[in-house]
Amino acid sequence: MSQIRDHTLGDRAGPVAASGRDRVLGGSRCQRRNAVSRAGCGLPGSSGGHQAEDLLVSHISINFDRTGLQADWNVAFPLERLKELAADGVIGSVAETHYSFMGASDPIQMEPHARELAGHLKRDQVDSVLLCPV
Amino acid sequence: MCTRAVSALAHYLEEEGLATVAISLIRPQTENTKPPRALWVPFELGRPFGPPGDAAFQRRVILAALGMLERDKGPVIIEDFPDDDPRWQLDPGWRPPPIPAPPATGSAEALAAQLEAEIPQLRDAHQRWVAQYSRTAVGLCGLSISECCRYVADWLCGKAPPSPREAFSGPLMLRFAVDDVKAYYLEAAAAGTGKPSSRQLGDWFWNETAAGAAIHALREACLASEDDRLKLIAGNFLVPAARVRGTG
Image 1 (cartoon, rainbow over the protein chains, first blue to last red):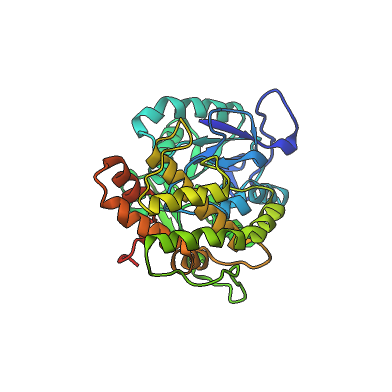
Image 2 (image 1 turned 90 degrees about the horizontal axis):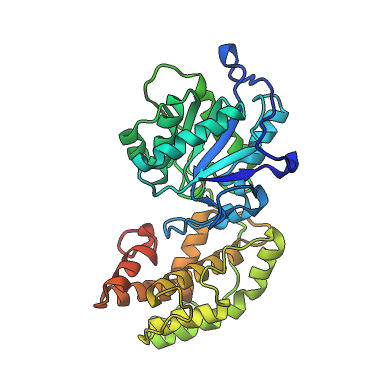
């Protein structure tokens, strides 16, 4: 699991989620915030504190070309799109820290890391998560 | 595999009280792993939110996914994104970088020579890409692109060159060198203001360049090898499944 931090929110000591209301969801779920987690991205050999602009794809499957992600990381890590939705009031806010897992992982072995991730997200006051394969 | 992994994460996070929605790139994997909510998208691997540089399209995908967070008729809800796969939306104005001639059908040596001759023809276009995006996927094997092509060419000619890097075996080095060659070509072809679809880029690379022809030929030659590592690399990591000749 690796962390990718939104550098535009500043160099804080730890991940902090902004607060806000998630209008598109409404009703009793109006406090949701969104984090992104997906597979195969990050910085090789490290596990945290990366900036979004340093994002690399360490997964070199021959079955997809990485040109699209090199040109526009939003094709797999739509941070700018989520921030636009927050700015437009469509969603409440976007977490500062996002997470990446290696996709070719045994789901059973992922469990302790997933539960650790849940703790990080809840401490960040995240209440909804967009999961994205690459 | 990635689609399966996000399904597993979805199950664990929901158990912990977080609402999740997963993008699915491979519907059968999602059907088997049954995340609480998943939006299947008919896009290719590597581009789960659609084409690069199309913010409106990406936004529609995200909104479709987030909208599913209001669905509670589960335990498993899978919906299909309605828009077509953007890889089929061709840019009629796009032109690939000019290269001197279509690949030869002659000897491996002739094809290798043609591959090495193409690289200088692409240098300007690739430099435009780097200037445009300030990043490149080229560099995996650690050689210059010319050295990289020479390494691939030597394999094509049956020389089985030793790996120049201690950490990589020859077959692994070949895999990384092929990946660098492919990235170099595709980035060069995508530089500029054109918006070629990935299908256009792939058709050009695999069907109209000496590099594409060389990698096809290399795959066939390596599959005939008695070296199991080489056969493994050739069978799984040189040519995408959809581009293996005879499969479309």
